[in-house]
Image 1 (cartoon, rainbow, N blue to C red):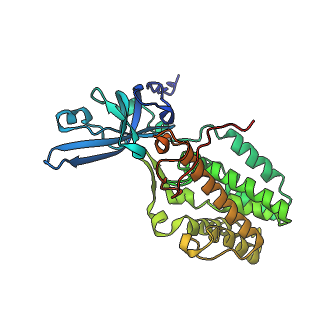
Image 2: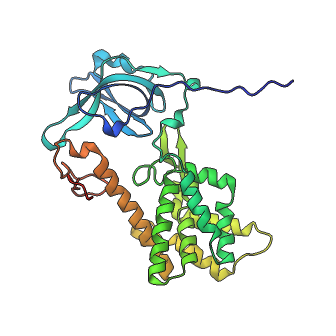
Image 3: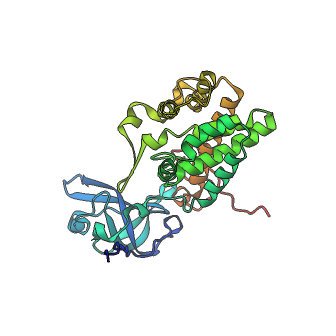
Length: 341
């Protein structure tokens, strides 16, 4: 009898919820090294600061000074380490930030004993998102638009890549599954707007699903985190999306839509950032393209605001208004101290 495939069991310590960690809290957990910065003091003594993370978020270590620098031996970017320490606040007044002050050497976990990608930030189970999207695809009245959308979203290989892709390398929806969540939000907002404004709902829904397909080729996922691919840098996800649509349609034996219809779909992809200043070569010229653009803005900006409010490092002073202006929103944000029953 043939040998059964070997099952690899990964053994790691329970993950901690990084955003919920409080000052003086004891931490012993496994983390992915997202960044390592090696510096020198004014006297020339070396030290290092690590950015550690898991699926819930990220946190910096306190400086690892020269007398304990060997504690970080082998703790390079992309490695998984077991860290032991306490949460401390660094800084004064409104600029204090949480750090993990190590109390023992880091232990580098061998790569064959850990699923490195499981330490990247993630939106979690995507089943409900796919169920909603597939239900809405099945309900489309336009057979032409349904056929175009299905070139991607009925393709299992594409779905796997799409679910894995972040919404951005650093910024809105920068998580595994982030692109799928963002697309769900854009499609939901756009459909509701189209229904309210009496626009073509199927066309808006198709544009929402297709608007960011280029990110599958523009972004890369690796043990070191999320990054932009060479084609993402050279062309950008907006242009890549239009090219992907053109390639998919060109591979068909018989056309499923007219040249005018192809142009309109490409226009929705190319214009969804609104202007050249923000990465679109053209501005929206149809009602449906305008709706997709603003739905994309609403999803991205709401994510920026929510993440900024949910980040406890922005409220180290304990006030309801953020201590500083988070970079993603560039203004103070308000964390309400009351409930709405």
